[in-house]
Amino acid sequence: MAADNVASNGAGAPAVDEKRRRLLTTGVGVVGALGAATMAIPFVSSMSPSARAKAAGAPVEIDISKLEPGQRVIVEWRGKPVWVVRRTPELLESLEQVSDELRDIESDKSEQPDYAKNVHRSINPEVLVMTGVCTHLGCSPTFRPDVAPADLGPDWKGGFFCPCHGSKFDISGRVYKGAPAPTNLPVPPHAFVSESIILVGEDGGQA
Image (tube, rainbow, N blue to C red):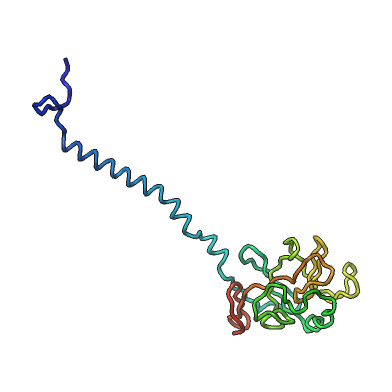
């Protein structure tokens, strides 16, 4: 009969191999600790913002030194288009001419920082910074600085037009009466780092 690989303590009960027990106990402890650490990784990762999330909310710097009057540049901030428009003197003059046709002339019901709650809806009257998302259903309006085009009629002084549902906005993004859009286009927080550098996503003012 083959002998069992168990030592006897002389009292009929198998003797406990203390060295083997310590080895097993240590092994189980290590495996348990590794398991706990592995389980914790997804939770720690989920609590830490991803690089993409940080980038999506980080301020965006825009150089407008080459932006000519009447032109627009588009950047992305937090997944939305942000327009920067350099307005001509003629476009600025049109703001007073269309005021009687607007729904929210003073932008009381619209979204903008306090420093942009004015007729220009901007820090610098010449430079408009605006989120290019229609307040109706989230479409992106087109930039229409042309005056009296055939499709918009002889009273059009320049501004933004949403072809999806026909909402019209003046060159400050203020919505016209009768448009589906309930409020003016939003103005994001922004600051002028210098005369030609704008930081979108950070509250500030004129440098």
